[in-house]
Image (tube, rainbow, N blue to C red):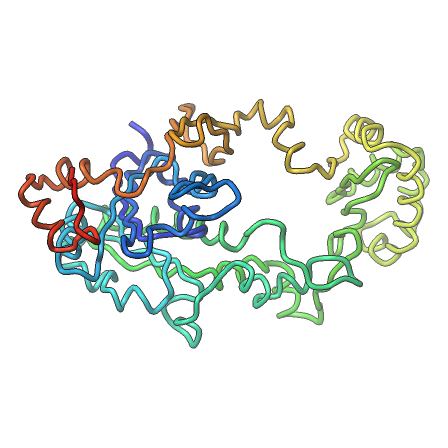
Length: 404
């Protein structure tokens, strides 16, 4: 069996953060059933350009592989009936809605425990289910600004800068996935489910880590650093070579000693101004000027060859295309393929989660309502007449001319 093959998750999710958390659970074998709102066209991720046609997009693919889909109008009594029947045979109700919405649409633990005492209700929202901002929509960009990330990202003389990736969204999704696994474990042990109140705000604040503790317990004020330098360790930043950029990191004294030898300046390692972490931090400006002058004399490839031979942590500043083509990417089997009826053979990055030696299987993301037959007939045991009546009653949105 796959690691999570015995877990069923009802995912009321869309776009990035929520689907990013549940896709890793789906990759591990969990039965993730996306409940898509029929009147608005389902998950908005289906319509994200540039690689998008009708209700399919490559954006949607990467967040929703290995999942199932069913249209369900939770506001309609017939749709609510189907949802409640699904709760009875599931382990988790997982959502990424505004913090005030789960209670409004009755998908909290108190709302559902009479149907299934072991149900886990995980809400991933922008600001959580409590607090003054709970009713505000939360998006990665907004959270990066609000929690101080943008203030410490970018060049010192440049504007506040967002990360090139939606790291708050992705981290929030992973925190939600961890919360789900912990809550399911507790529910199976104790026989009682729970709410998981996860927020992007909490996630982004928690990721402030050491700058936060330095600020809360001292006079440290994080600031943007030149060439993405570490706030206290020197050298630990990007450097320009003769033909591009690369990163050098010396988080241990031995790496600094090795670096000094590799660049032909062993004297720097013993110079009292640079001999320790604190000394290099104090004299960072003059030391970095020396290093930049040396690194500018040779190519990135030449320096990486020297530094790797000296066991100094380093790497090129790759483009995304170069990173995807890296030999280590191939060796780690990080690119997987799926077949799609519209886009053909799709290549995408796999989940980094690895359990045991089994390679996960990957199948394309579902079309809207594609899994209705499996869910309604196979899982819930509805007969054709019941499904037809649910359809006429608006359970799946507008009545359909053909029902599975």
